[in-house]
Image 1 (cartoon, each protein chain N blue to C red):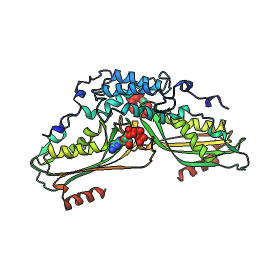
Image 2 (image 1 turned 30 degrees about the horizontal axis):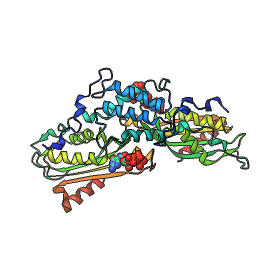
Image 3 (image 1 turned 90 degrees about the vertical axis):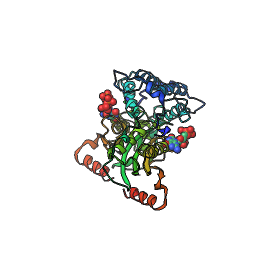
Image 4 (image 1 turned 120 degrees about the horizontal axis):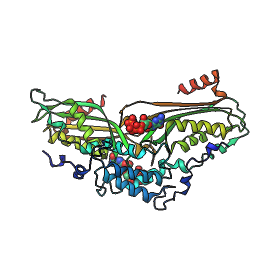
Length: 211
Length: 211
Ligand SMILES: Nc1nc2c([nH]c(=O)n2[C@@H]2O[C@H](COP(=O)(O)OP(=O)(O)OP(=O)(O)O)[C@@H](O)[C@H]2O)c(=O)[nH]1
Ligand SMILES: Nc1nc2c([nH]c(=O)n2[C@@H]2O[C@H](COP(=O)(O)OP(=O)(O)OP(=O)(O)O)[C@@H](O)[C@H]2O)c(=O)[nH]1
């Protein structure tokens, strides 16, 4: 079990669950007060009809979009099927994901393609691959880190013989502000183990690109 | 000049310009303090490398995505060309826009289609139509209000004989949280003046839908 699979932010565990909103692990009253401050600071009236509920909605929203911080990254890959004999690539393509850019707190979203070659612990459930993506995406993140974390989890947790992860995403922080580069896509990849080598690597890539 | 074209949030004018960030009209230090609060409240460490600059980036981001609050909604349509004789529909289709949902402070974005039949003040510059969309979109908003405000501005400011406005948008608050309705599009429209009547209305609609 790799040390870098331990929760990165142990502080998260201390964050209280707010019973009124049910938002797990976020301090809702503290977020609400901060959002009222932001509304006033941009020159809005936090008490006008359309905004009066905004602080509590944003608190619930953060509880949900950052739920990955409170999820156990070990859990999805703890399920394996010893009775399935398969030594070739297993690829789950086009997993839609949403994340939040930790630099601007604006969404980025797109698709993840995740493949692995089974190793010592065999194969896992297909849905567990998608769950793994969500555990890492639903946090304040950068795209490269999600990509790396998924690949490392497959290698360390599932003891895969090889892993390949490609993420394609649009970043709102690039389209709605700053350079305003509409339609730009960011592509990141991580390749591990026996998939690093020549033909298997390019074969996996072409299976991903077929999508 | 219609009363509802006056700035809706007079408080905005009082918001100071922060000289260090150049973010117009937002109180950057106040936003920065609030964003640090939010990062702590979700269970993050606001001092870790990737987050230490986030409060100031978010302050600049809000200055930019809410810049419409500080813009004069009368300005775009103040430009008219008396020498252009044209009594038929002028339609600007597929104006890409970005806005922020005032309920969740998450982006929504898509395209605006704006048409009008020139009236007492004649025609305006084509780019001014796109500017008008941005003045109203770059605020905390709901899609219906942007749609209505654009149509009303054309009628009152430009003294158009008719106006038609259609907005098609994706709301991140519907895709990344809550119902998680991926790919859902919200379409809103506003029709005014002589465009309300039978054939001109359906003709304008079909010109919009051709896009
Ligand atoms: N490598 C990488 N960079 C990212 C991600 N998200 C994200 O905002 N960035 C980048 O982080 C950088 C932050 O730069 P900055 O400190 O100058 O902030 P800024 O808002 O003024 O930058 P900008 O206006 O160029 O976007 C930007 O280049 C932005 O594009 C990501 O997931 N991966
Ligand atoms: N008509 C309209 N509704 C909007 C816009 N933006 C936006 O968030 N809404 C809606 O505002 C409502 C807020 O509802 P709510 O107070 O129950 O907040 P919530 O976050 O718990 O609702 P939700 O989970 O159903 O999205 C939601 O139905 C949301 O879809 C918009 O531009 N126009």
